[in-house]
Image (cartoon, rainbow, N blue to C red; front, side, top):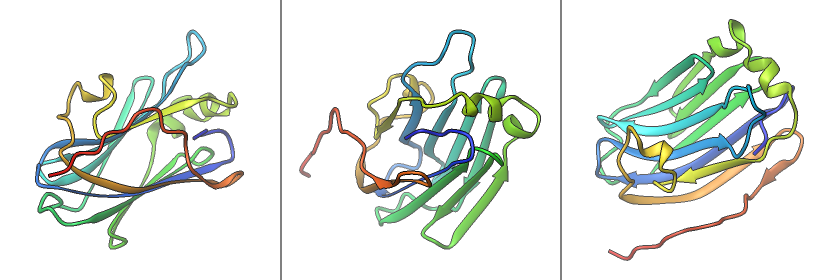
Length: 168
């Protein structure tokens, strides 16, 4: 998905796992212009809590939502980022909601960085990205119903480059 000026991008998915700390999703641009910051969004469980970390230049900000998400029951996660206001919204099971105004936008240059235009990005789900796994472990569990929505494009399905299904 493209996170550019004046747009709100959202994604949602469902997961279940027994691991208290595990990687769920990582979003980053495929390439950025030389000298530009590389925005990243990481979604992971840490001690059973959902953490969403937005990284841009020297700013790394984390929203923590809910707890006890590692009991092998389905949970729905919804994320949204408004590329103009810099608001990151996170919801778990449509009951636990948290919104954070990101300092990368209010104090940093993220608004201008996202304004630069169309950026092709990669969304890694469940452990496909080596850089996303530096701090997290591979996902063991199930992830389903991954959806993206862009205010300009509506709901869309990204191209899948690799996937694995495991029968237990």
